[in-house]
Image (cartoon, rainbow, N blue to C red):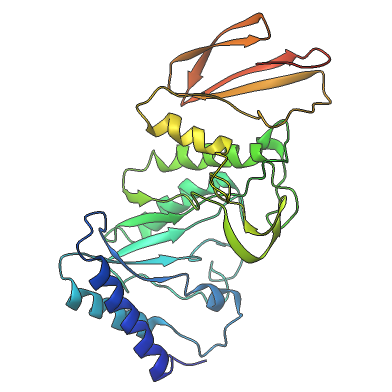
Length: 302
C-alpha cells in the first residue's frame, strides 16, 4: 500500500545493477527491462488504492541509464486498453499507465486467451501505436496453452476456457497462426516474443493435461516433444526445408472423415494416405490443408 519500503527499494536497485553488470558484454542484450506487469494487481483491484510502483520504476530507469548509457530501457505492460469499453474510462478500474517510464514499451497481450478475441490483437496494437506514436512498441508476450493428449478437429471453432482442463493442441496452433499473421503485418513493432518456448513450472496451474505447469510452451517441459505450433514458426522463419504433418498424436479417431493440415515452407506438398495419393496441396503462409479425407477402419498412415 505504499511506494515501497527502503529495504524493497534498495533490493530492487541492487538487482538492477547486478543484472546490468553481469550481462553488459552480451551482444544479444539490446535493452534493459526495469519491470514486468507491475500494473496487474493495480488494474484488477487486488492491490490497495495507495499502491503505486511508478516512483520505483522511475528510479530504476535512471539507474539503468547511469550504469549503461548505450542501451535503452523497456517495461512490460499487462493491461492498458485491453478491456476498452469495460469501464467508463475504457480501461479496467484504476488502470495505471506505464507509458513514459522507460524508453521502449513491451505489451504482454493475450487476446483470445484471457480476454477478447484473437483477431483483436492487431487492431489493439494499431490503437496503441496511434495513441503513443513517439514510443517504440513491441509485443513482449503472446501465446496459448497446448496439451499433447487433447485434440479437436478444428481449432478455430473450439471455445477455449483458459483455466480449464481442455487445452487442445490444435487450438494452440490456430491461435499462433492467427497471432503471428497479425504481428508480421505491423512493421512498427520493434520485436515480438512468444510466451513461451518451453512449458514451465507454475504452482497455480491445473490446466490442460498438466498440473503445476504452464503449458503455453512450444516444447514440452522435459524438452523432448516439439508441439505442432513449434513447426508453424519453423516453417515461417527457417530457411531449412520444413514439412510437418499436424495432429500426429491424435491417433484414436471417431469420425470417418478428417482434415489434414501440414506446415511447410514449400510452395506445395504431395500428400499420401497409405498408398493412395491425395494430390499436390498448395501451401499459403506456411499452411497446407486438405479437407474431407475419408479414413479407413484400422491404421491410417499419412
